[in-house]
Image (cartoon, rainbow, N blue to C red; front, side, top):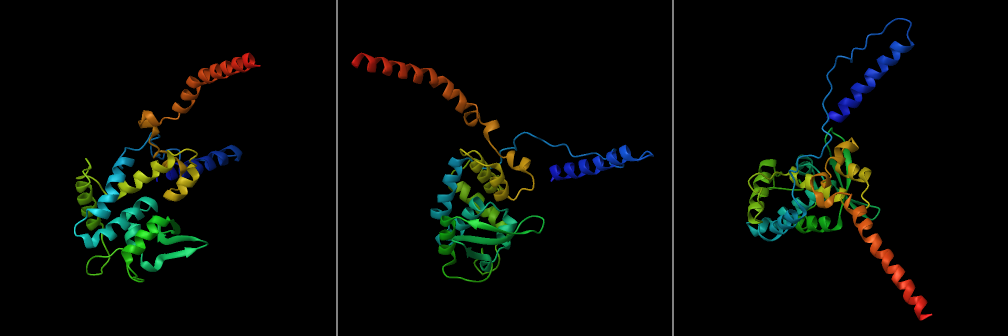
Length: 254
């Protein structure tokens, strides 16, 4: 990630600046002339789905996919992408044996980018959809083709676009698997009392700045944080007036 490269280059450059400061002879900083990535600090382009669109897409997978025999697979796949927050290559690499249960919760062992193995929690509804799809199967790739082989990414792209078309989504011809992950992160971030460090761990981001860019409020005025204080300030005089009126009535009654 660009943020990680910037941090690494800054640390290395700072070390040589320190050496030059404490040394009796000048020390050349080899990182002074290295160009660093330009970090974009604004929100990411909104390539995901709105909550309304996601709500339309999931039932389409569950109820409208053709043929009906593959509806449980389509529904379970979309739920894993949305609620476990994994890239499609990680999801398709998982085997049934990677599913597990620990301390009262369902889990999935998977590899994330960089080759790191991570245990991810599976929400109960997603787990139930997986079990319905697996129908007792206990081995092999988690998501399979009709012949039992491992499902591949081109098939998932075609599936998503077919489902988006059936759901009447405007981006049906452009939707891709990563859009489900990029839709889930802002959904979490924009909830009251959201904690960015939890969202960062869930999304498997190395840098919290990457996670923060998924928040939709900078581009959506209705969700901007200023609305809360504004509403409180607007209603405060009314509440104060109500309390004064209530006090007068109590005095008159007394």
